[in-house]
Amino acid sequence: MKLAIVGCTGLVGSVVLKVLDELSVKISDLTLVASPKSKGKKIEFRNKYLNIISIEEAVKKKPDIVIFSAGSSVSEKWVPKFSAVGSKVIDNSSFWRMKKNIPLVIPEVNGDNIKKSTNIIANPNCSTIQLAVALNEIHRKFGLKRLVISTYQSVTGTGAAAVAQMNNERKGLKSERIYPHPIDQNCFPHGGDFLENGYTSEEMKLVDETQKIFNDNNIKITATVVRIPVIGGHSESVNIETNSSFEIADIIECLKNTEGVVVQNNSETFDYPMPLTAQNKNDVFVGRIRKDNTVKNGFNLWIVSDNLRKGAATNAVQIANYITENNLL
Image 1: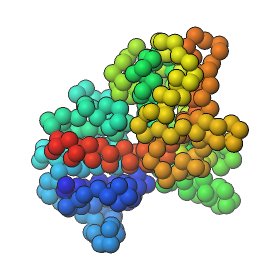
Image 2 (image 1 turned 135 degrees about the horizontal axis):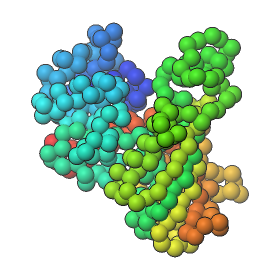
Image 3 (image 1 turned 120 degrees about the vertical axis):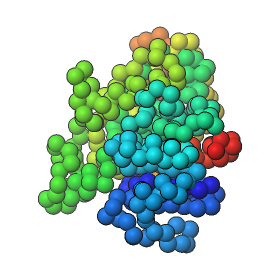
């Protein structure tokens, strides 16, 4: 596979390189692309130093697959150019996610939406990925009726500048403020931009993307996004109502049999998912599994995953693997 990574020096791009190596992905030619200020710099990968080149040069190389982690404006301009030369593009930005006829893919959930004719594949929002992975088999078996979601999101989801703001505040240093408020020793119910409906763009991603991935607009979803001062991953408290009745043991068994999910649900040993223990891992961790006795067919989950891994880089690499393993190039 001839592979290109656009945005290779960013938080997600650098993790893409780590995941490619850890999963021993077969690459015949690797092209690294970053902003013009990084052109000519070298990055080590598998004991070789590779030059960062311009995006114009990368298009001319006609890679088989391109992973984009460079933001919506770059994706809007350059993804079609790679597609035009025959590359399959996996895009981490939000630009293509809700476009008609562009598949929004989590391989273990809806990988079959990728066809040989598909040239652009959207990588879902980080919070949506861990939610959909955890609920996939439950939805198939019992049907999702309504979700009430509260997320507690890592500063890494905003980017390196947000991590720097938190670390500098922790040290008592002055720095550029990415958020409207201090983030160290604080949290605020604000992710993305505020919309006319009172929700934020991050909250609406959970609604719209989940319905698109499950191909089911009948699922009722409401969400609140909270930014918290951690770096290990995103956490979600999710209240779920299903169409069919269940025993809580059925839900636990369903989760244990869900690809990509690790169940941590032992209160006696205080074993439950946390960002600290999910960091640098590719799985989605689920715990605090309990029935909600206030509604019919209701239960609660606590879902945690490293947003830079399964929430972005790992899922993108898994999409690339899915394409090659299923002869879709």
